[in-house]
Amino acid sequence: MKGTIRLFKIFGIAINIHITFFLLFFLVLYDGVKGIFLVIGVFFFVTAHELCHSLMAKRFGVTVREITLLPIGGVSSMAEMPEKPIREFLISIAGPISNIAVILIFFFPLKYLLGEHALLDFLKHWRLSTATWPLTLASIYWVNIFLAGFNLIPAFPMDGGRILRSALAAKIGYHKATKAAVALGRVFALIFAYLGIARFNIILIFIAIFVYAAASNEAARVDIKETLNKQRKRDE
Ligand code: ZN
Image (cartoon, rainbow, N blue to C red):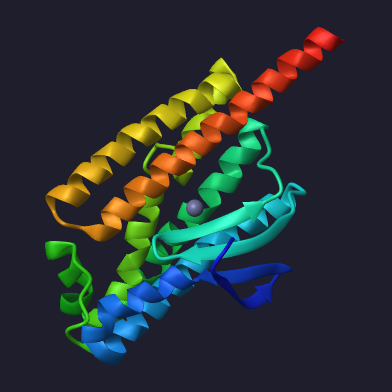
């Protein structure tokens, strides 16, 4: 991907950061050191989420070249996503599972360390806060609920869309299942765009554009594949 900086390599996978990721730092400039900690926390859990997808993919022999971190999440560059529904299902669910695991494992230790008030403050207004250090640490923890929740939206290209496709593919075939997941992806993109414009939320508008483009890309990819398959069958 253009405009990326290579950070390091882990499990043979290059971790790249897209320059737009640094836009996040401008958003938290006002919050000082605590804001920087929050961005690093987001960075850490997005990377862990993507690594879980990648390590599961590697188990199925899929080559993962790199992970690129964008301000709205991460993208793993896999040689080819397996079309066996159960494999796509396991690879797709591995990311959100990592976030849910963090939420479950660290709930009681953090409640003890930060106090119930600081930890549960987030659930009152669903907003990340850097007002105090305990609230900042709690916010870094709750980032995981956003990562799991957003990625489980059942629309392509989110993980939930892939999970939906793998479930549908077992019944109606890969091509039709993709069409359904892509159509849902476009509906969600329009909803995000509407909300983004109505609330002047730039990040939501970016997400809308990204989701729409990725969904359309996937539709085109499976269409080409389907055409090639039909041609090959005719030639045989
Ligand atoms: Zn994911």
